[in-house]
Length: 285
Image (cartoon, rainbow, N blue to C red; front, side, top):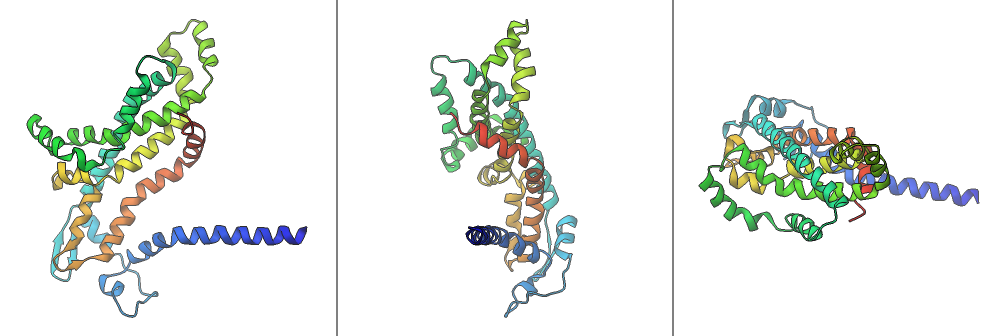
């Protein structure tokens, strides 16, 4: 019995270690590449032990990259700010609109509610290329092309359906009797929503907001077509590393490390809410 338990623990530990290596190896490899020059990365045979350098990070922060063809000016830090601003603002707007809507869909059963909710969710089904041409024409006509407001509006196609459906499932998991008791005590609908429903749904709201932030941060197509260089996020700004002289692998790796750091830190900070919110709220509906 003890022998079988020991073998089982060894096999389980080996399986977990294999999975961790499989998923962490690309991240570790990219992190190591970010401290190497292009010449070191492309060396044949490859050298796994080389002197680290901060030249890639210095170039990204200063905006002046050194390539084999000469100097290259980039605004990577501006792109990083654009990603942070667009993603954060889009999630805030989506939470303001989506959380009350999710509560209404969970508590107020009215004719056509399921059809409306599914229609909002269907926005996530459509590929971005399907709506890019009409959106571009429409935004040019109303003056929202190449503006932060226009991009934040378009990002609602990413954030709002996700927040609506995850938070709705979480509200449905909360017993309505608690809210009814609070209402009987003399409190109105909005007081009940603010004091009872929102605190109880906190983990689900945090999980939905985190996922929406990650999806908005990783968006590429909308910003590529609807924004110029001064308003593009890092996902589009990284195209500057592909030059006529070749691909600057070290700079690409350093850009990847800098671009994933905010979402990685946010995910680590909110992982408890993410696990709890997804396990309780997103399994219904």
